[in-house]
Length: 442
Image 1 (cartoon, rainbow, N blue to C red):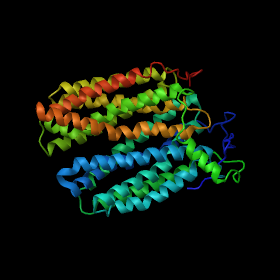
Image 2: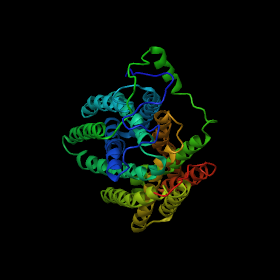
Image 3: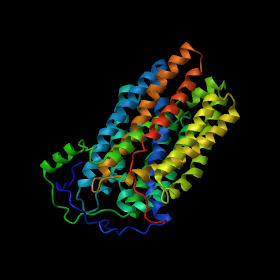
Image 4: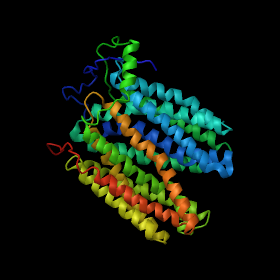
């Protein structure tokens, strides 16, 4: 997508300018509007990775499903990483009259629609891999600039509350995506129905956001259209100075490690219930569904209080509390042989995860360098997407080794022990961070 680029990246003139701290009215309805597109993206990806792609790979490869699933997800994550960094930088430097975020959201959303339609008709692994990469490409093109709307439009002292709404959108979207895909994936024509639903939802959310959420517009949209400026922006996409922004990169590293723990705990849940808690099918699938519902409900309960609280106290303290909760839950999962106790642990885990989701966004936006928001949010996005691929690969090797050499099901308990290590290390990494502390209570 050719963009109008300003090489010097001067302060933009905005619909609602932030250079002199004139933000949109910070109301609950505004935060709700801001989170709609995030809800749709979460809806898409929860069912896509957890159910749709896994089912398609299993149908096409049989006993080799683990190998091909790993390759498919890894290639897609690589594409998402590269495009996220590029789109963020180009968005920060764009000089479009309609804004520097909207064009990427519009193009990314409209171009992913054919890829979603194609997914309902793929019949081979090569075609699936290509299509999955296209879906990653176009959704990331829309996502990376969109994520910068929070630092664009929300003052630092209210970003905890805004982050809570984003976290709520994420949790509800994940639950909706899992329910939809779980209900339809095995039915005749179910995959096509899933894709049509995703296409309508994503398009509607994009149009609503473009229509209702104010944006940054350029004073001189005709300036800076040369290819040299575009090439410079591409080069800058992969140039980051960790020495100038050490706290930001410490937080990114911490987020990466903590997410490794979260996704190590969730990706093997069905196998854990089957082999470690000795629950046969189809009861095991029903238990897993119940666990996901419980974690979502408790996540919503932990989300809002944590987000609002993070506007008043140290965000590090909220992260400490959230990781302690998830760590306690992981320990209970590790030790228990009872389904009932596991459901209680799921409630605790969800509350901790919901609290982390609320403060996570707010924490990073307070540390973003000025005028490079989307570019650095692209790195933040990497710390979210890559663990979803890396954690199952590492966890799978660990589980396989101990299941083979100790006892079937023991490997998943070892993975849960590794989860505790991830959470401990990731939490300790935020201790040196000097965070923005709100100067007044909201």
